[in-house]
Length: 227
Image (cartoon, rainbow, N blue to C red):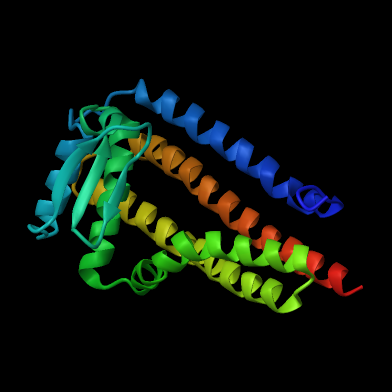
């Protein structure tokens, strides 16, 4: 009874959105992976060129395995691009590479939301697990205090998910601006880049929605226990 309850229906809208977002990002990435960039830049080359033109010389670019495992690590200043992005000259590849380069630019200029997100990463990674343990213990043992502590820790993850939104949106905007400003995509190609990045942004919106509704669900369960 503790692993299934009627409050799960609260999550359904966000779960449906998350499933759609995954479908959208994969189908859009596949579509524009088949369209080559007119400039011939691969994702790795595009990232290197953009970093150089922004005067960023202390960021390394590394290929990594994993479907769409692309990310920028501000702690080590390493931009990691998945194999299907690093070596591909498709619009999808250079769009994703430019997006991750946008994060490196954010780091360079001290973009506040990125700094905040980086600061609360430990809470998001470890606090979430502790939150569930404390909440379930409080639920089973009828200890409201433990449930409250679990909710408080989970709130840290919700904040992380929400802060992620402006970070990702801004990186995508920077990506399109950088690519167009440096003449690395034609105006008609920019539309394809935007489509890929907008689809990716939808996954972050879905993740934030799941986090918020999960928090609501925990609060509802906490109040039901009081009743």
